[in-house]
Every structure is written in C-alpha cells, then in structure tokens.
Image 1 (cartoon, one colour):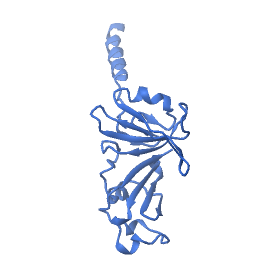
Image 2 (cartoon, rainbow, N blue to C red; image 1 turned 120 degrees about the vertical axis):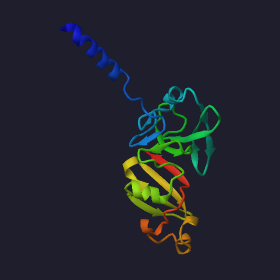
Image 3 (spheres, rainbow, N blue to C red; image 1 turned 90 degrees about the vertical axis):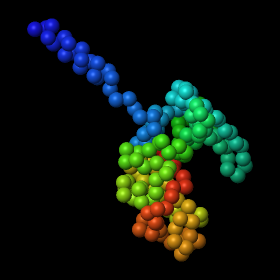
Image 4 (tube, rainbow, N blue to C red; image 1 turned 180 degrees about the vertical axis):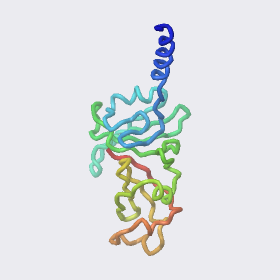
Length: 183
C-alpha cells in the first residue's frame, strides 16, 4: 500500500516545486515584475543580473539631489527609470518607477501603449489632477499615476488649470505620456 502512495507523493512534490514563476513584466499592487515596494537599491544587481543598470546622479540647487537608476535590457532597450527615496544610499527603497517598455503590463493588459479608454474601462480611477501641461490620472489599486498630455484634450481644457477635469472629458483615444508607479 505504501508503494502506491509514493509515486503520488512524488508527483505532488514535483507539481508544487514547479509552481508558477513570477512574470518579470507584471505590474500589480506593490510589485513590478521582481521589484517590490521593499526592494533596496543594493538588491537591483541581483534582480537585473542579465540587464544593464545605469546610476544617474545629478546635484542641482533647484531640484536637489536626484539619483535616478535606469534599467536597460541586454539589447540596450530602456525598460524602467527608478527613483530611490534617498539619494546615494544603497539601503534606500524605490519610491517611483517610470515604466518605459510596453512589455510591462497589468493583469488587465494596461501598458504604456494603452489609451485613456483602456484605463477607464479596466481600472478604477481614484482621482484626476489638472496641471499646467498635463492631466494626471491616479489609480490607487496599482499605485499608479498616469500622465496624459493636455494636447490630447479638447481645446477648451488645454489651457485652463483651474477647471476640475472629469474622466468623461478625456477622450478615450488619449495616449499615455508617462506611466508611473509610486510607492
């Protein structure tokens, strides 16, 4: 009787051991691929061991210390721009992520090539902020803020910063300018 259960146990262990591997391009709440909201700068070399990491440091009196980290794939295509919460600190965590590569997408297939209509139909919009040149759409369920150029809006909304812009006023075909994640 024990001999009949042994193969079943071995098959079960193989199935559990071969569990689903994490998608390196999936955007979800608190993670983007292998990056999480608790990933430290020092961990990036392990996470992106097959890619290139470029540390950009700018000391500027008006914008302060900026410490962006650019991630490129092995072909030289830019994937992400990461901004740590503390400049020049290897234990700092990532505060914002600018998604460049359209392979990064949500479970509902939202990526940098999506339109406002795709966002509106698949994600819950938390708020919309009107700025000088852009409209910023906040999506709390994935900690995202998506920027749309005001040139994509009707003419009467393009130059007014005081009007509260509603989702219904943004054309469905409006393109994403920046797709950012903020933790």
